[in-house]
Image 1 (spheres, rainbow, N blue to C red):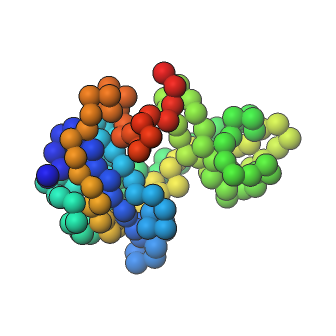
Image 2 (cartoon, rainbow, N blue to C red):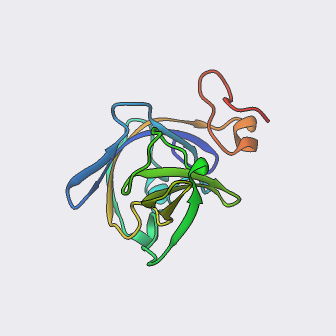
Length: 162
């Protein structure tokens, strides 16, 4: 099956900038998404269109097709209790996840106080030209339940409550 709208897609990727590897899914679970539901970077989704399980390819994306350009002075003070990550002690340069009414965002800690942290709201990859090396693992039609939830379910079904 080829990747098209409403396909449930699983793929591994290695992400690099100027030849330097930034991150990879190869040591863990593949990334999964539903094609055509805006759950994937626009440029990467365009490159995945029409591919099938077993396909390997590389695509280089400008900031406009991935995480956007950096915006200067996009700093916001956020209470420490709202920062999520694998640490109890926040330090400048670390990244955290913040949930807002606009969804989930990755932020970079700029300065830490007793109760708040000043955070850069730019995505850490904003302004970067990124290369994705992609291996398509699986392609299938998404189920009606997955389409209504807007995400792919794992082996055991949906992992969240409604």
